Image (tube, rainbow, N blue to C red; front, side):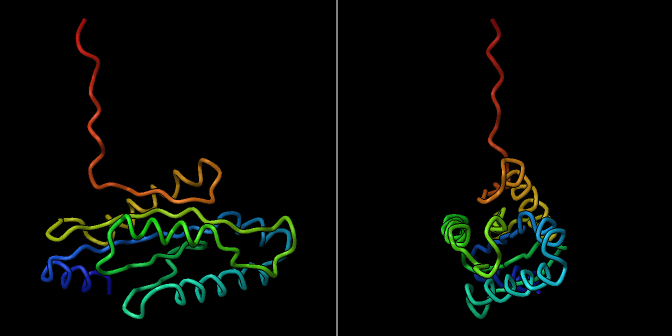
Length: 156
């Protein structure tokens, strides 16, 4: 479905953005509170994500503890604002103290005419989310399509 959106965005000369939302410590919830509680977290997460996006946006579970959101016409700056809002909300108030759930969110935008497909965007967003998770989770990071060039030291 996202590929169809990309084709239309190229025709409309518009940007699209993919957010990968990785639930931090879902495994800990499963181990300490049981799989039934972990499953409820997943169901609640899907509902919260669907409620927070436009009807035309796509929300899909793409991994055990990962959801992807495709948003037409949204650039990485607006997506970062949405990711920040999502990270700051307490979505699972029924979990006992000490079991707060945070999110590691990766953001990858695609500009019109780019050769990047959905798989590439998902990979970029996944790498950005992993970078957040590696620093403790509970945040977001934008993946840019081309890394900033690194300059070597001038010869001495």
